[in-house]
Length: 212
Length: 264
Image 1 (cartoon, each protein chain N blue to C red):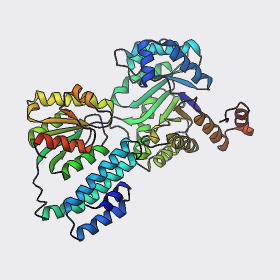
Image 2: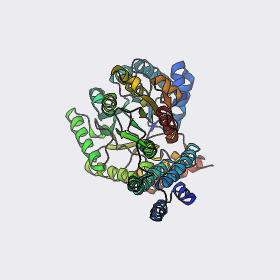
Image 3: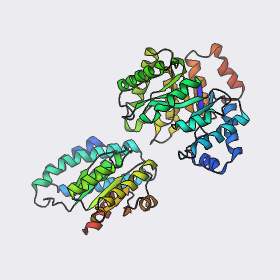
Image 4: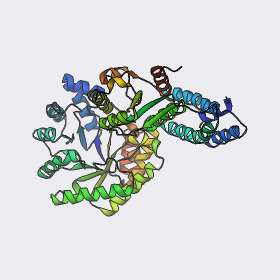
């Protein structure tokens, strides 16, 4: 646990954060510990964004820092015993049809990934049929639908319906999230839950799979 | 600098409510105040579901025309709504907008038949282009189409579609370069844009928007979709036109001063 790393990421000091991550790993720090630091930093950044204290470009930079630190940590994880990351579950994730927003989606996918999920990220503007195909092939326990604008409401509904029509609805739990989404939209779309941020996505998914 | 006044837009909650409740006074109020601030066109967007849009758009146009002679800009992608509304306009309206998106193909004949000026979006079925070159290419294809229908270049107001600076810090530069190239390649056309997309996601947006307006004007923007009642916009246009040698003997500026426009 490195308070310094958390602070550097929260303060958007990209170069210093990545350098510190490298240094810590070289000194033998636990790779999972660094990922915990990223998780904590992201929680703080998310709160600040919701409070209007930090803004979209900073979310993009946060995603970029996570990618870089994640890239340093992953090979160490695969090498170490403690981090023999047995995947705890599978998730199909994507931004629904007609919506091209991906900044927050990428952060959520990253968080799910470092929390032990095997995530298939379908990208943006994903038609319902593609979700259905992915669920058939990948057999996830959870499906995550991301959307930023109100134009995402009906595509979310359609995606849930398409999974029902394909006889797959009961085999998955569906969570939605993003900009204009909320509990009402989840009810409208007949999804199982709405998550307000990346940590909510992790909590929901872990809960459904039965992991603490 | 021409202004397409933006406030009568059904995607705004209060306006949507007025349309729903047929609150004529509210719409007439917006029309009057925007017209008095010197708008060139009053944009009317019903923002409603396709079945209701024609009657809602007609209602908006009738209420705007009840209080002002300023021409209307019919803001709809729905040819049925445009055809319905164009029957009740008193003056040739602006059509907002045409593009190379498949859904807008049927709007072109309306523009041609009624000899309307039109906002033309630099996009096609692939969505908003990433580069300047793609935008210019789409504009070229748009012009081929409009010229083949005898729509004069001078009736077209191209919108190069500014992307928010928060997700791409080079987006404004691309935008300015695109304007310059449009004016150089197609000297008769006009260039327009909305002024607030650029600052989406950032705080203290008005400072970004007004500098964006000034820099765009220097690049060749000659029309904007905006709020004509905004002091920020008014003063920015006055100062920018002055500096761009579009204000003989600085008369517009000094007259505005005497009229109290610059008072805080």
